[in-house]
Image 1 (tube, rainbow, N blue to C red):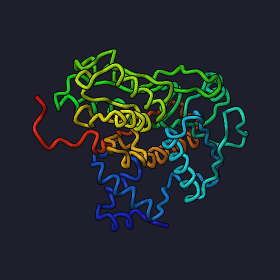
Image 2 (cartoon, one colour):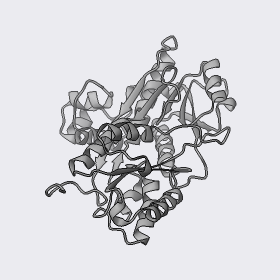
Image 3 (cartoon, rainbow, N blue to C red):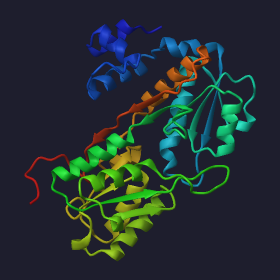
Image 4 (cartoon, rainbow, N blue to C red):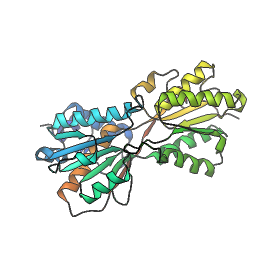
Length: 339
């Protein structure tokens, strides 16, 4: 079994640093580069954390409640499923996937939930007192435990980056959130909420520059891009767009490329997720990288604590700050600011 000392030797960091990173010590201040190097070495050496190893005698469930039609946007969630499966296989965990809450067998000790769930499903989780942790979102922070990307951090950082370039008109492109069970768009996306709040605060908000499609797919992005082009001449277009997902951004890119709109010279993009295709788009997307490995590891740790401490009903919310990956749609600043 791989030890903390072996990971320390491989990375060159101290055993104390490695231990605190792998144990998700929230009080430990460390650079993203150091954290990623340690986590990568741990995966390469098949390190099994003490928390994960204690799952060996437990039966775990995973439920994905994601719109099956949003194929490209699902790349993010498909990757999450692959990481959960790989973690289970590597560590000998008994994990099964289920379609919904209502088919969970009574033998399940804990459940990971990803996506959007209707009121009936949430009520069932509470009524049956199911040990559960949500990944990527939280339907009720007063009740449920979750690990999520810190979207408020990402939105604020993106807008601040645009503001540093003296961009005075910034648009937002997002989508509606689909709910499995009643098929209605009833959830206002946090990305849009954070954008509207902070953009108003720093004086770059215009209601006309907020575009919301039916979903987060590339097709939706393409259609929104065409609509923006119809409504704006080059001189009237926002100087930058914050786009809610890479899939949307790829669709918008296609629409703008079809009309020979120069990116980032005419308008710049920052998106969210850093799916694999983001670095291969033309131009390559500047986007926030969400560490799915880290979120899954943290979710399993939270779930383990809930299972071994069933009387502790206080919900926990862990936010993971994404890293901005500079590419061609918004290059890192190396020259003077725009006038």
